[in-house]
Image (cartoon, rainbow, N blue to C red; front, side, top):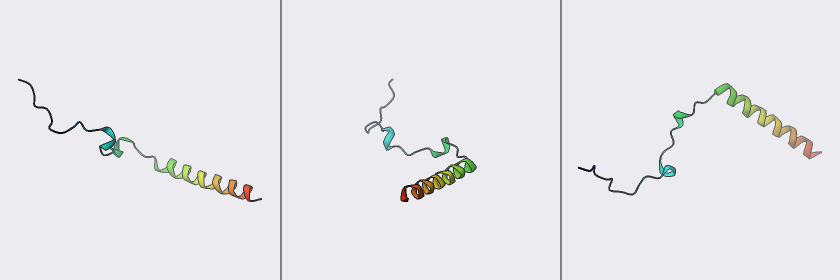
Length: 50
């Protein structure tokens, strides 16, 4: 006997919720990257103003 099929259309990947727990975060690395990006942006902004 065949298994029953779902009543609705198949679920698309983009419609499913994200599993954020699959991607671990690295707090120190993330903070250093954000700080470095901010410093680089400020340096570029100062250099372009002149």
